[in-house]
Length: 93
Image (tube, rainbow, N blue to C red; front, top):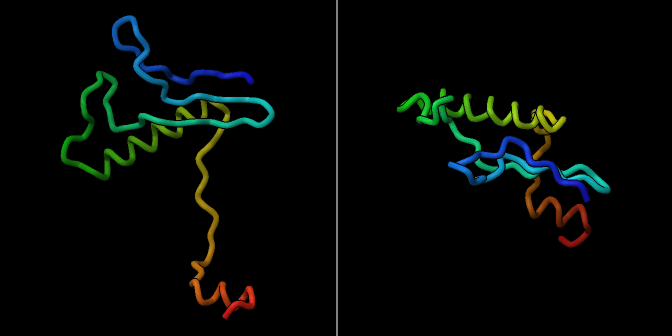
């Protein structure tokens, strides 16, 4: 198993946490954490503007994914299923 730390956050001389950890073998897995709307100086970005904070958070997430060779894509479209409909499809209703 090969592990690669992506964007470790350092506090003093210690690593606080990893923004992401890439684990390879046999497949590539990316474990992501700690993304938030922080300015480059560490302060909260866009105080009081939730939309701007969400945009910045996703921007930072896209940057982290890119460093690991991943990308953020829209979810696949699907139709919600009702329990009754699924039961009929399985012949249980």
